[in-house]
Image 1 (spheres, rainbow, N blue to C red):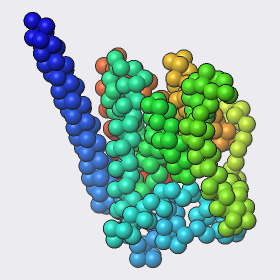
Image 2: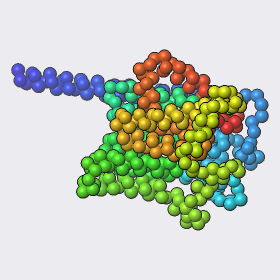
Image 3: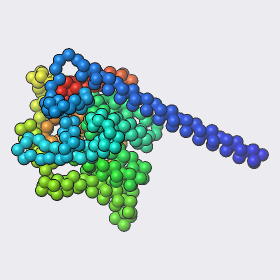
Image 4: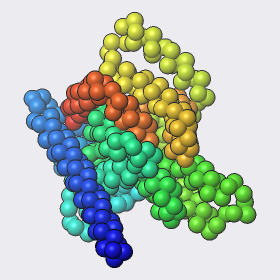
Amino acid sequence: MESSGRTRKSSSESNSFCSREGSLRRNAARLVITWAAWSFTVLVLAKAAEKLPGEIPDPLGLASRGIAPPPLARWDSGWYYRIIVEGYRHDSDSSEASVGFYPLYPVLVGAIARVFHTPVFHTGIALSLLCLLGALFLIRDLSNLWDSRGDPDGAAEAILFFPTAFFFAAFYTESLFLLTTAACLWGLRRGRWLVAGLGAAAAALTRLNGALTLFPILIAAGADTNWRLRNIRGKHALALLLGVAGAAAYPAYLWRRFGSPLLYIHAKNNVLGVTQGFRPPWHLLRLVFKRGFELVTGLHMGHQIRSWLELGSLLAFSVLAVLLFRRRLLPEASYCAASVLLFWCAGSFDAIDRYVLVLFPCFFLIGELLRRRAALAFAYRFAGAALNAMLLVRFVRWIWVA
């Protein structure tokens, strides 16, 4: 009798394990199919936009040099291409230079293109799509950790339907940055401190604001040690040191090569002849009220949709960052809040609707809201898909969208 009971229990556990394994495989397959369908749609739409009647301009002068960039390589893509082909250069008389772009993405694309002898632009787009897939898997697992009773695919769906999501398939850093920051937060939640540190270092080498991943590392380490210095272990110090090293690497390179660790900041402070730089948050707050008044009264008709997207993204993600604190997701909230504060100090709305793409913990909250409101979910998907298509066409036609 006892032996029979053990046999039934063992059989039940085996069936349960097989069921979980089967469920994991189905969920993974579903995510891959979603990613593949989204990628195919974006690539096809981009190619169709390129074939529309009318001449496509060449503001970066690539065509005049015999270089034909694919439809998803526009604007900043030209700078990354030059870094890969020519390396970093700095001209003090130029309004912008290649030093205004962080190195990890062009370094990876260049290395892969040389190894496999593939075209640079197509290699970069393929890398972006693969990084997006990896990021979606990590975000899905994080969603389960944040709320095991919710929809683990909600955050990924909210991200892919966001109006500027097509940048994840472009020759841009969005997908790589999403992957590296997701790896950092995933490592913290799973107790993989080496992964967290490497993710933070890679994020800091991809973009300036990648250094903000140091905040969640500090908070997670504090929680793991009960906020006592004597409880700090080597794994905590290693994750933090890797993040600091990643943040310091590019300024150190600029210092050694060009004599100034702040050259990136100087390059960004004078773009297209317009002086930019860090401003106090209330400077942008005045612009919020001004832009909002212009939109409501119709005095800003030239770029209505883009203005609504930029203003709406800034305000919505500011609220979402606060809500993450209320959910007690402190590492994630600190990263998103620090990022939003950086946006507020930028002194401009420009490209905010693209920069928020990588704040994936905020999209977790959006996914939760859409799960509870079917009508809102339909409206979000419909509007997001339509805006994605419209902005993608404009992007391909060299019209600045974000």
